Picture 1 (cartoon, helix red, strand yellow):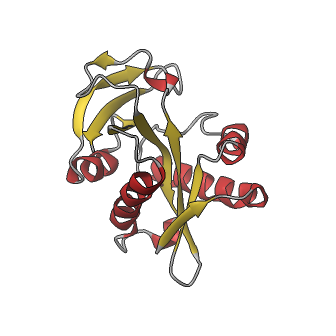
Picture 2 (cartoon, helix red, strand yellow; picture 1 turned 120 degrees about the vertical axis):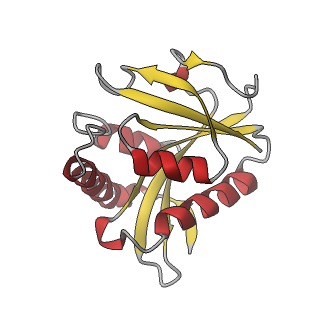
Length: 172
């Protein structure tokens, strides 16, 4: 399995994966991504700025997506908490989703492993990786913590006025 930068002609594919992720969250009773975020404009910006990555199987089937964003990330301007490292050299991971027909096969864990290798290779200057997820998204919280991230605080109202998200950091 491997990660690669998304191409402009893959906008519809990525939007389909994100919409599928929104449905998975709704089906689980999680209010994350149930409003206008992330939307087509956000995804297009990710692609245009080289932040969108596609996760493929070895036979080139698309399994999922993520966005890898270089500092600064203004999503965390209102962090209620304290970073593990006071650095401007970090990378943020956002908008992680696996196609629902690939759920339950361990791909989310493999995506995280490969994502950290991708970050190490493409962002060797990074001192840390930052990520957040909705307070009700226990599966993602478990996955984040499984890979050594520490909860450093929370943000409220960044993606939607009522959203509360837990923020994590891992030093590399």
